[in-house]
Image (spheres, each protein chain N blue to C red):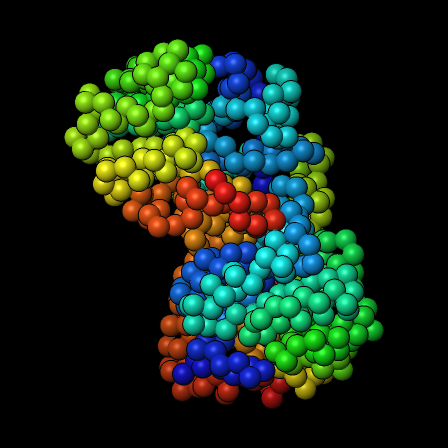
Amino acid sequence: MRPVDAVITKFVDETPSTRTIFFDTFFEQVPGQFVMVWVRGVDEIPMALSYENAITVHKAGEATSALFELDECDSIGIRGPFGNGFGISGKNILLISGGVGAAPLAPLAERAASSGISVTTMLGAIKKDELLFGKRFETAGKVLIATDDGSEGRKGYVTDLLDDNDVDADRFDSIYCCGPEPMMKKVLDSSIIPEKVQFSLHRYFKCGIGVCGACCIDGLRVCKDGPVFRGDVLKDTEFGKFKRDGCGCKVKV
Amino acid sequence: MLTTKISGLELKNPLMLAAGIMGTTGGSLKRMARCGAGAVITKSIGIEPKPGHPNPTMVKLRCGYLNAMGLPNPSYKLFQPEIDEAKHAGVPVIASIFGVDASEFSVIAGAINADAFELNVSCPHAEGYGAEIGTDPALVEGITKAVKNATDAPVWVKLTPNVADITETGLAAQKGGADAVVAINTLRGMAIDIESGHPILGNRFGGLSGHGIKPVAVKCVHDLYSALDIPVIGCGGISGWEDVVEFIMAGARAVQIGSAVGDNINIFSDISSCLEAFLSLKLWTLDDIYGMVHEI
Ligand SMILES: Cc1cc2nc3c(=O)[nH]c(=O)nc-3n(C[C@H](O)[C@H](O)[C@H](O)COP(=O)(O)O)c2cc1C
């Protein structure tokens, strides 16, 4: 498909480093799918839809910085949604979110809560004012917080909450995890049954449609077979250890 | 029933993974072999690591796909482990290589260990490489000859359709000592975003692949079969078993499948079983239909 022209209608600064960009076009998605966002003349990058008509951007590279420089009424090109999103199952689910990993998890929380599923979220960020979508997760259910500097909730990584007695991962039917790869790797390596956890992965995408193979983790195409994978599929793969740069060279995660 | 021999390589079926598709890592090549490919070609590998062109690098159009990856690759110095890992799947692994001149091609071919080499003199969107040399018969002959001197492995030359007469470059490859030719690489193309006037591809233009190019590829194979003594490997727009039959009837000894892998990762095993059923039904063998159209 050619890129759809999406005109920017509104910006919301969510945290000091993240901004939600709303546009005039709605995309029907399964939370966890991604769209390719084209800043014309700059680059095209994969992003989660944080709402049906919005993306939430964390300033990182050239393309995300260019997204921060756009104004209302500017337009971007959007292709997708692509890939496989989260499979929602069970009566009682746990979300584990780190940083901007909240972008695909917030719509999941809302969709699950609206169909009567009990949602608990472990929400982590480097500090209090970087906690993303806290209100959305609270509206959907229970929220436990961790910050690296202890400015809110437990001091430490969001995965440390698993060691607390009030989060017993075993009592949840399904667990959904998105955030920095080392955080997700910790969850994968924890005592939680890997079949129970769905991880939403991030890789450098080129074609975005499962042809070129640039985003492969041991033959798994993150763009087409993922970006959501069950934990047991990721066990004993490059996940959490290596990724490929633009040339295809192995680099440490 | 589908076993095929080409330039000394034994294939369990005549269906190979085309260069540049799932070909950058040992893991992805292995997966495609396990999904039923008779052989796999790697991503084209060059002298230095190359990140390729900026995104968008590929877009699906009504008639097929347009891509301008820009030959991203980790360089031959880092690539041998990926080939070695791919070999574990038990099918031939062919290294696709590219360079600016005969000496770059030979350095890579001399350093890499693979079951065969495929010379990419046909990429339409990388400045100084690919089709910029692949349209000149003298350069094609010279590069082929140099690589033949640098390696004992079979050498295939992948041809560009962006020429007036593909048999000229095909004959040049044969003269240079090629063991087979592969036809075709992508056709030059471009797509423009009408909302903004921007070219969609980061590189502005690229190469067309997918079902729209199949008739072009079938004609190239047909002409090469007539003109050459070495085998022709068909490529371009295959997405089903009927396409494979058509290519073989045009004169292809084997075929390669690229873009269609995106939507059907099991395309190799799917096509193998249908092809076998078709041949049984017709009481034909692969040899019976090979070049059939030329006898009619
Ligand atoms: C994403 C993509 C990357 C490609 N990369 C290469 C490459 O590195 N070397 C090469 O010789 N051909 C490359 N090609 C061309 C294919 O190998 C093939 O010749 C062409 O796509 C036609 O086949 P198809 O219609 O089955 O895709 C690439 C094609 C695509 C779509």
